[in-house]
Length: 442
Image (cartoon, rainbow, N blue to C red; front, side):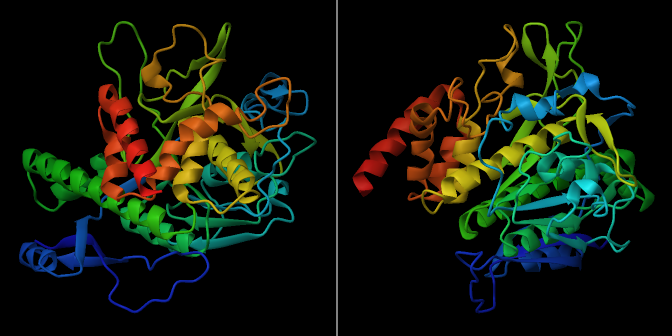
C-alpha cells in the first residue's frame, strides 16, 4: 500500500547561496511510495532521511475571555512582559526577522499596524486567521501596544514571516511544516516560532480507515513517529548549520496533570522533543514566586509566563487572554529576538550563539522554593536589559556559560550533539572535553 513520505536529500542542483544562507539547503519533497519504492529511495546516493507525512495540530490554548484586564496587567503592560524583563530593556528586535508557523494572522489588527508582514498560505485556504491562535502568538511576540497596553516583546522587528500551516480547525500535515521551515530559512528568519504537535491519534485513525487493524496501526504509528522525529532533528540541524543564524522555538506541551496522587509526569511533546529545538514550559504567579503551570509538560529547555497571557484577538481590534505553553513560547521567541539584536551590534553570530544566550539567560532566582527542577529547565528567561538595579545582562555568568557552545561550533556536529543530549551526570565532563578541544584548535 502506498502512502505519502517526506523525503530529505542532499541538493542535486548547483544552488548559489544568498545572503541568508551559508550553504545550500538539502532538498525536501513529498512522494507517494510503496515499500519497494521506499527501499529504492533509501539506496540513493543523495538520500538523508524519510518519514511518513503524519498529521499535526496546534498546541491548543485555554481561552479566557475577559472584559477587564486589571488582573493580567502591571500598570501599562501585560504581566508576562514585565516578568521577562522586556520592559526594562533598551532593545526591541531591530534588524531581526521573525517567522511564525501557525494558523495565520489577522493583519488588520491594530497590534500589527505599520509592520512589514509577509504572509504565505501553505494549506490552500487563503491568508488570514480563522482560528485565532496565530494572531495571539504574533501579538505576544512582536505586537504593538493596544489601547495603551504593551502586549509584544520585540516591537521593532524588521519583518514578520507568517506561514499558515494549519487550517481554521487547527489541523494540518507535517509536510507543510517542512515547507514553511525552508521558506523561513530562505527568508532570513532569526527566530521561528511553531507551537505544533504531531497527532498520532489522527494518523492511527487514518491507518485504520485504510483497513489496518488497531494493533497494527498502533505499531506502524509508533515506528512512523520515531522516523519523523529523526527527520525533524536532521532537518533542523541542517537549518541551524547552513543558515546565517536561526533558532526554532516551540511550547513543551499542555497535557500534564500535576497531582501528588499521580505517579507520573508527561514529558515534552513531539516536535518540542526534537534536539536542536528550544522547548518552553509555562509559569504562573504564586505567593512565593513563580510556579509551574499545572498543564505544562516536563523537561523544557527554559520557561516563561504562560498563564493569562494578554495579546491580540483575531477578528476584532481588541485583546484576549489565553493560557498555554505556546503563549510562553511566544515570549521566549521575543526574548531571542532581543538577544539577536544585542549580538548583532557586537559581532556576527550563529544559531548556536543565539541559542546559547537565550538558554543561559534563564535562572531560578524568582521561582518559588520547592518547584521541581524537571519542570524548569534552565529557568525563567530574561531579556538583555538596562535595569542597573537588577542583573543588567549578567554578562559574566551568561558569557562564561555560553562560551562552550559558540566555541563548539568550530567542532563537528556529532560532538555538539553529544554535548546537548548526553546524560546530565556526564555533562560537566563533556564540557571540559570540548573546552580542551577548542583551545587546541586556536
